[in-house]
Length: 161
Image (cartoon, helix red, strand yellow):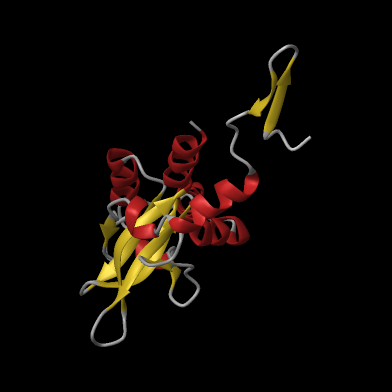
């Protein structure tokens, strides 16, 4: 019933070589965010919404991070850019600093957290991507990577094979 043992007539019982849920959970918990993170795509607060949209397409990502002096200031998602575009203003004159989600409302993870923890944050907060951060000497956060639904899906597919 668990799918761990199969049976065949005249052969008998044998291991099905299927992974159970506990094995998958343990594997996801053992993989750290630093192993799967991608390169963060950063812009500044002064970047226009139009340029942010272009960056989003050129880099093939769904989230941009707003940084100033290496410190994470905000996050811009596809939805934020879509709302700005639907507003009807001149996208070349609107800075992303107006539409971004600012700290401390940003959900993030650190490099030593597990893939399972990152996935949990993404699902609970209904976001597509979380920044991977480290602390700067002055206490601010620096984005050193990103973990997206795509990163997590790739790992799950590899584990399933």
